[in-house]
Image (cartoon, rainbow, N blue to C red):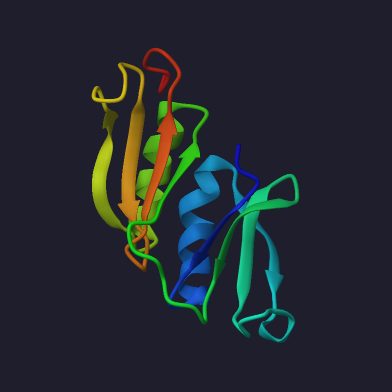
Length: 133
């Protein structure tokens, strides 16, 4: 199990705007911002999560990593669809539209977008059946 994920990004504010919109359909919101004077790298840090606990941190002033991937659990296929739409409207780039990914298993319904730094962000619903109704 993971406690949290941290990503170095080029522009913390651009990433904040992207993740606030893209993650809203998954009921994930920004819960904290840490000012540059309070951080080791002197960069801004934004924490996103649920119930007041940040599980995803984005921060600037360090080189973004390559090959980084994050998968967020979605309650339904419609939430995956909404994530994909919101992420594209927020400036993300398509990296795989919503659909079943049979290579994983018959119920793996996912969508992929690249965030402003090219990080591969996924929303996935692994519940059986088409639950978009």
